[in-house]
Length: 464
Ligand code: NAD
Image (cartoon, rainbow, N blue to C red):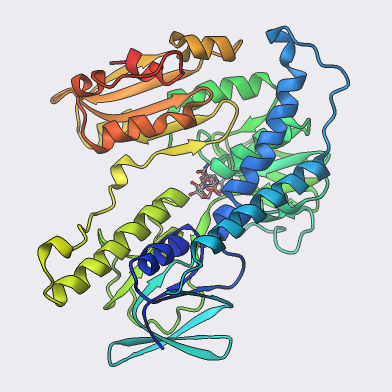
């Protein structure tokens, strides 16, 4: 059978593309070597959030006195948390299977290998069978990066995030190498469950790509809570359970810290396995180069998700997939000279308005430019900021927290170009700020939006 589209990889990019194209009546084959849902659903976003929610329940129960509630003998059962996490993941994977269950979509379990392109048909091999397709979409994701530090490989004390999520028992102590998103989310999880955690970060600050004033609020809280965070610190080697490090700020200072487990979370790299035959595929720093419609430099080959190295977030992957499929369908209709009104309106991905969330406690959520980024682009900005306590709902539900919300405004046009917040539950309203940034709202445009009262989202309105 000749498919319209062959997709390698069934994560958020791959399954979204498969669903849209097949529901548009195009025959699609999707290859997945592990479980549908990819890293995000199986060993990333969803399992971490499930465990973090369990940890938050425990933390809240043991810190409820400030709300006038005393709970005694509060215990947690890590195995039960893990079991629940597995059930959540299983249900969501089943949901994806359901979404792909239509006559135009074939899901093949196995590792796919792209073979060649003969007379404008891509040939892909999987489980000994050959599949042919007009379009190819690469959604192979990314894998944990293992830095060249001696003592990491084959060390049973060293975990990556996948190992950490699979653990059946909590470690007694933990060192986390890398204070990025994964590192800080796991630091939150372990700390809230009572595990002593030390974070080691090479840069002068944790979460270096985020607004640093917002990050400082988290740093202050975590330092006060007793989480040692060693910044500007380079890991020299790992010897069994001991991490040897040196300070990058002063040559003299060296040190070591031991723990039952050492989690290494220093980034992820595009996964190009099975694509070796795609000769001439343009790469940049190991990731596939794409244009604004997610096309690679090879004919009728698209790439979406982490493998493109753009922004490694599941919601970017699924948006890229929407854009790529729309573009493919549009292209085909143009080629077939169909009527304009039947054409799909092919859109581009707007990377400037992608929200991101770090599930620490409190959460951090942001969208658009930081002050520093605006400065480097020579955009004159006005920075508006308020503690989250200006929201009544925040005050009611976040005893002892101050939070912070910053709005970055282009002072030439009064356009909102960025929003950065820390405070629960800012992940739930950052989408409103994304709409403002995506649609180029001015302060006056956004002022006309009615925010429900009392909600924490009103902090955005307070800033206008
Ligand atoms: P990251 O790039 O966010 O952070 C890695 C950190 O490790 C950086 O701060 C870096 O300076 C530091 N580092 C690198 N080498 C080091 C070394 N030798 N010693 C000490 N520190 C070192 O990467 P990550 O945290 O591994 O996450 C991978 C990807 O997954 C990211 O793109 C992230 O956005 C994504 N992710 C997103 C979410 C979310 O949306 N909530 C959650 C988890 C992961």
